Length: 305
Image (cartoon, rainbow, N blue to C red):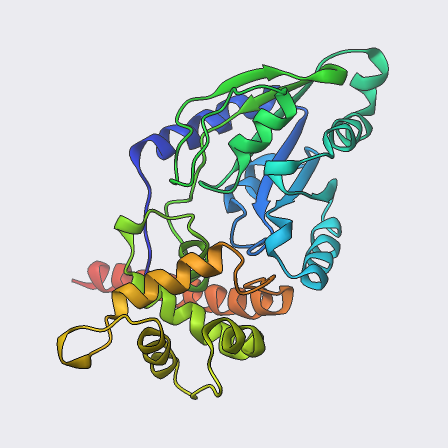
């Protein structure tokens, strides 16, 4: 299944971000620590060039600690990039973040000039909650519904840091289908745009491989079947998600699995590793080449007619 969700205001926001970028000294990108790569905006690597970037791994309390450390090492290998972990609802690292901003733009900091930063992140990643923590007051509207922020805001913080807020933006073409699924599992995409059964099945398949003990413990499973669908049906039966005739209601079961996974009730879970991403992107590159070859072949065929 290919997941595509790109409301009109996101297209407008992407355009505005590119326009404001020349005025920005530093980019702050808020990521979901459970899906650090999939929650990135791939446009950023193209448009930021050499601008320094701080990647904030939010929802750290829900993510696998050892994998978060590996992701921090992965990102910090990139040019002019630093990382911090956080939990936006109870963020106490404001001074650390502002100090890091000044360290990454030393010329302006030493001259006492304002440091213009742009904060960005996908829908529902916790960006607005962080902004309210940084500002010390309710500025940005928050909520679990994706795509709450729809206009840009400019906020003055302490230590000469100026924050340009941008609406949460997903990208129009989710080339890696696994990335689309992970975004849906964590709630970054509106439920009206997805099929809960498919998303929960994807989550269960991953948990069976990566976190089998946590899956069994949470849902009271003595053993795991080799088939994700059978495990979903067992979970549905145990939770009383039955239709007439004893058939399992997979939609109700899927909602239970996704709700509890998102809330951290299965423990600290990360849905991707650097190694997984490297392998998946090799597949994406192959798909791109095949698509380009087909396009070239069609063009040649038209010329021959």
